[in-house]
Length: 562
Image (cartoon, rainbow, N blue to C red; front, top):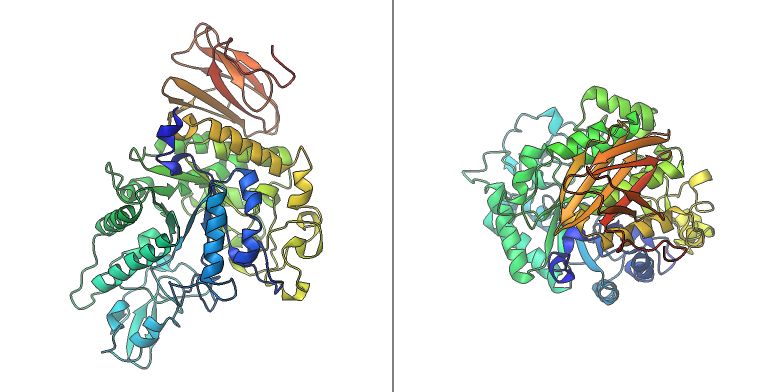
């Protein structure tokens, strides 16, 4: 495919890397990550092949919810630096050709935000209608309580004004009232401010909760959520035609696809595929590619310029809420049987390497799958080196430990005394002494260099992001085979979910013996029969990517021309 075409919609074959400034790199030795530290590590992301950095919240905060309780949407938390440090970070990223997006957390504020402090000062206060109030709490849906270990209601009584305020998340995070035009204007103003400082878009937190009818607020009617997001996207693209929205929309496919903007694609640019991710873990637990193949078959095709975002895990718990109860228990039994490894009864607070028992072949297969599936791959910091979790930390914090750069004190994250590090790193097999960037950069068999290689091939295969894809029958339950076709070019990927060596055969419609399959990950080619059949052997948790070519144009093996 022509690069002049693919570069217009940069998000369709981007490599997104999520990092938390607070836990990435400490530049001033106080034990807290900051922008001055993060900017010194951008070259690591450049070498890895990252094309877009996603910044978790870096705004001023009491830090009761890891930065998602915000007191000022127009500033940088002083612990993390200044606006000047942020601009320097943006400048260096741009110099390396890396775009930056940031979390847009505007469905709620901290209860210490000046808006809410004013709102609860009296019923006639300036910002009273910026939040959702009711004389009586509306009936709670128990399934709507996001954090059932901490909250038992969505309403909190405010003694001074004698009304209840709504909070979808924690009680110290009152929800904003998006039925108020002033609130909607302010959200657009926040987007515009950060775009002027160089952001290429936003990851929108908890999309379905941003516009929801929860109370009769004096006749105010919440805007249709899809009108709201269409307006937001229109504002975004007026400011920057290449800007994108990455949406956290954990809904069934039929409901989720509406947030793209149906056929128009004028709302959320990319939506995370939670259903595909959850079925991938079910397939891993069973050693059977069937659940993932079925999910991919059911997944709607997004509008032309929109895309799915694929991931192995994100910064929250690894949610399994879209699986049935019995399926969820299968995954729990395989990857987190201890209750301490589970969270809210619906997810796991573990990283992939520990769930797979450190089996490097299996781990590498999963990341090969991530980069070959149709969608934009999103990495969570530390995945590239196989970091583990620290279950001694509370809740989601288990997977939010500092980045492990070296085997030295504090894993090279900070020069501060270890007692000053907020979230302690794992110890033992997954501690920085054994898992770190510097060691893996010099190990040709490391996970870091494997993922770097996968990214290079992914970027060289735009068919994976842009093409028409189909899941193929290959005669082996443990093998997922899928092909992507674009502008007369074809890429085939096959992955073995079993610990046993497996043989598979696919029928490639439209191809015959005039073509061969050239292996992109290892040397060699596979012949295609006159009927379009190709047979290959996959080792234990094996994975192979093939490009269809003629024998004359097949790339040479590493040992030289054939």
